[in-house]
Image 1 (tube, rainbow, N blue to C red):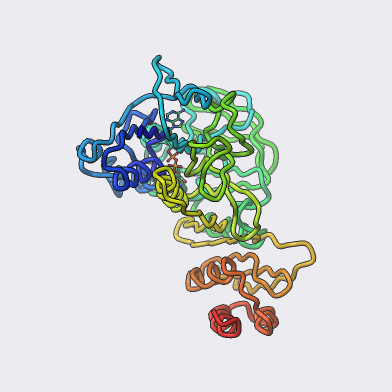
Image 2 (spheres, helix red, strand yellow):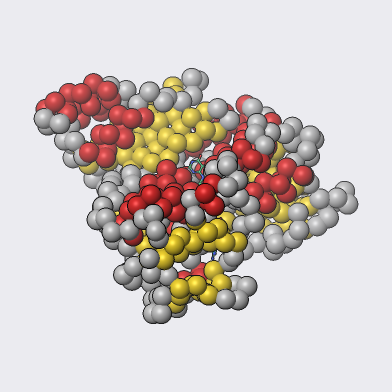
Length: 419
Ligand SMILES: Cc1cc2nc3c(=O)[nH]c(=O)nc-3n(C[C@H](O)[C@H](O)[C@H](O)COP(=O)(O)OP(=O)(O)OC[C@H]3O[C@@H](n4cnc5c(N)ncnc54)[C@H](O)[C@@H]3O)c2cc1C
């Protein structure tokens, strides 16, 4: 049996290792287009903060790891997949046949259509190559503009500050992390960052970027909103990612935002599976399809897809949409339908000065979503209550009165439900 895996990130690596453990005689090819040893993007903030060396980002530390497992690593870009004949077409010429194929090509960073944003000296923060470019220019005293205060923007902010730069964050939304936090939490995160010396401009849109800036160096960003213009020596663009699926055009595979998969992570074509950031499976909390682009989901789907590719029949229970974010030391979490549901109820408690906030969202007596800020003690319980869809009964009213009673509600309602 010949297995071909496209993408050597966490999903692809775990899949290759799982395949080897399941099929000692199978041929395994792990194809990736980045010139690096397989690495974890999650480690990039630590690299930028100079807490680790590049080797610290590597997923496996033994340079002979894949060779030792008889996994063939190929540094190639896949240009096309021909599902009819079971072949993968490589960008440098050549092709490979497969019996089972895993798509694990992750996401790619995207830029908004802004004049001047494609000039040299403007970088995403998605790959190790991006991190090297940022590290070269983010030096003490450099004026850095970070475009986008989403998940990735917030994660790298602390590393940039630790490098001693003068940091300005420009966010188009009316608060920070608008796709993960409500108004109260997003504004508290903004206040937290401002207190730590970051100039945060929300409801502000970059209109164009010119080079050089008025002082003959760097860039001039023309903006609309809380500021008219900004000067920068370095611009970091963290305005979002999309599944890397362009090469699948014409393959006959069903796609929406990502690659659609069934419960066993098989795509619409038999023998072709998908895992990681690009796969679009079912979300626990909503019952709808979604892309759950986080590393734990990549590892888990990589493992389960490989088990199924090698003959098992294991369902993937789906991911609960859940995010944990550390913004310069302030921990925030959001789960499921944190934005609430039509006709649903909600409860919240805010301690503005103490940077503590909790918001719960209910549908009837089910907890369907939550946000916390500055409190990590409820993470497991909130996740458990939402994921297991425990009927809260009387505990719903008690939580409406005091949303911090989440542990008591969990214990009370799971006993009630005999769970
Ligand atoms: C700065 C940063 C911080 C992050 N922090 C966190 C965090 O704290 N928690 C968390 O859960 N997640 C975090 N993430 C997200 C996490 O890194 C991703 O969810 C994870 O990498 C997804 O793994 P993957 O294997 O699906 O894809 P990837 O890691 O993206 O790997 C896919 C690989 O496939 C390659 N590829 C793409 N197209 C092709 C092609 N046509 N041919 C060959 N190869 C191809 C890509 O270049 C890449 O090397 C962070 C990401 C970044 C950038």
